[in-house]
Length: 82
Image (cartoon, rainbow, N blue to C red; front, side):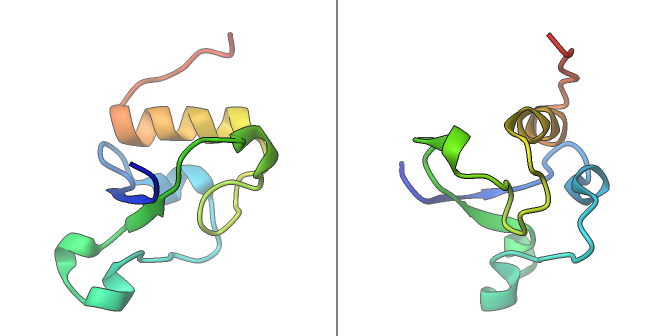
């Protein structure tokens, strides 16, 4: 399922966690349908450790930070440092 589209921030507002200076609205900009707000392309995870910075706006530099944010805002799971 390469390049599928997924909604970011299923369980929490991901903008709070990525601390980006801009709010990109995702597919909403193209379609103008509320259901497409914060829906983004989700590429496969192949070579993910080599494709930083992370997120559509490049706001997160490290993979461990991106994984922690996604666990929180997509699954409502708090990952430990381990």
